[in-house]
Length: 116
Length: 166
Image 1: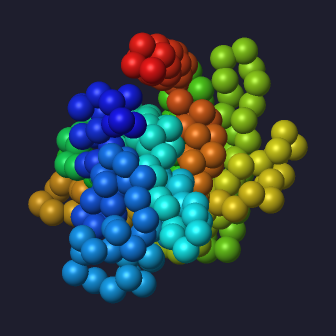
Image 2 (image 1 turned 180 degrees about the vertical axis):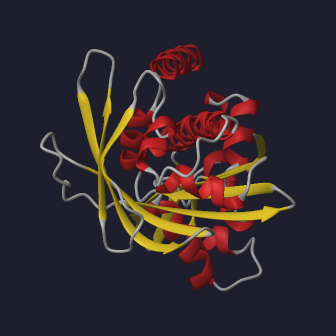
């Protein structure tokens, strides 16, 4: 249901930006519906502790939120943060692209000898 | 200039940008080392950067400000962490107050590597932010007016989409 708020292109873009395959998968599942960490852990060939570690990284980045409900820890995707992070990193990428263009222009000028 | 690759890592809030220049590694190093050349490219022409102090020596601090249209200044600092001329550089990037003094906020880290092959120099810069707020401030500081407007429009469109789908 949450996923409906994002266009397919936007989801693709966001997911490409998650470099780690496991974390990408966790965010995907947590965005489709909220679920417990123990349910999540059944999908991966790694220890519960290792999955918890991935969840902690994503939680620190605010890409998912975690809430304790009884004995379970429930995670869900944080769409707003995902969208904001993708947008800001995209803007920062544009800033670097423009910087590289300006460096290229400086380098193409005839040299007046060493300046420093 | 050729963009070789650009990678965004959302969970690590990291951007890795790689470009190639038809110039020697020593020449590309100069655009980082010489403050007069550095300030010609660090900020966009509409928001030019001025480096008040800059020396690529570990342990030193570079101070700079960006002048936005209208004359207001946004101040920042670089903490020079590691220098291995002309191949690598590690710098902490932080914000300063209106007097040019660093705010207490934790900096982000930028690493730059240069390598030359047959007269073409490849430059990779990796910037890791510690929070979305920090990334947002850095984008706001370095962004051209046009891009700022475009971002605002995207925000408005997204808000519109959310309302329609709600």
